[in-house]
Image 1: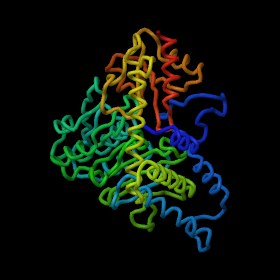
Image 2: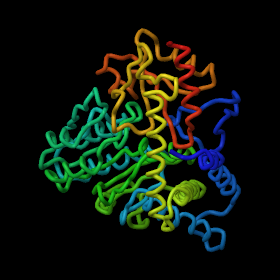
Image 3: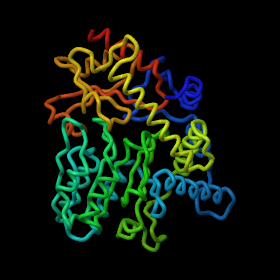
Image 4: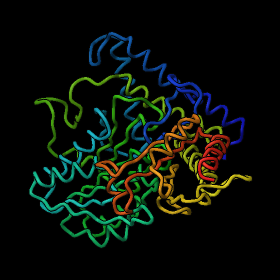
Length: 414
């Protein structure tokens, strides 16, 4: 885990780490709903919002904006590990999942669409609609309710040689469990080598490694507000073969262009801010000087720190019992799940989750209630639960914050 000095430096780079602008001091364990924002992103957003010039004009300011966009596109490819393909800045991660899935369904050869019940409704809804519109079957693989994951073996049992489009959730925002993306993609390709594979990386992006070149996918989507940037845009990578399919574009416009209209240059610039932050962190935790190696080192360190925090939360620290030892607590996915990525979901038997969240909030600890609705019902209904408490961490959270959380939980349930 990070030592105190480095953790203080990390926390110093984010806005509102310890305080809410509306309520004052608080601990932020609602990162899956939207992570904290880098101070550099706030500054960059303000700077670019003030620039009057537009892209594509014959003047120095416009050319500078184009340079920012070009660098950001390269940064996105570096972030997801892409060696080719197109980068798309859109409205949101959900919107981009819909676009990529739609174009794959409308452009692929005949055959079914394959997904799983663990997926977020963004990809499931897009597949349901565009499978129907393109006359395809939509096959949903049941996930493992107890573990909160879907495995490569499960995909292998359901994929067929004519599977045309497949979707994969990299990490669940409800269970907190990461899927083995390379293994799942390999299982699909082994049977259906021409299948278009589109990945929802929205929850995973700030927690773990991404390498689309190694995995062999065709689309990868992230939401920057969940990875230390800001609201108002989404980012996707699309392979060359997915880009070659017909998609919405202006007649006579540039070949391979996905974006419609003029996007905010500040959005591109703030994505680059995020990658520069990862590179900075990688340089603090390793001797790496190459940006790619720094990114890898940062991700390794983030994963280790968050794993340490979640172990404390589940199993306790010092004389504080963890969630696994508190009366009536049931942990989604089980107490010891190696797939866990910075998130613990739980419920208390006989107690509404909203009541627990309210009690935590009263003590300045921000968590969230997940309900068995259109967002989380696919996870909670099979478990027979109406709701659960979601405690979502990020690498800037501290052991002291986990101790504060466990203290309140012990007072509440002990």
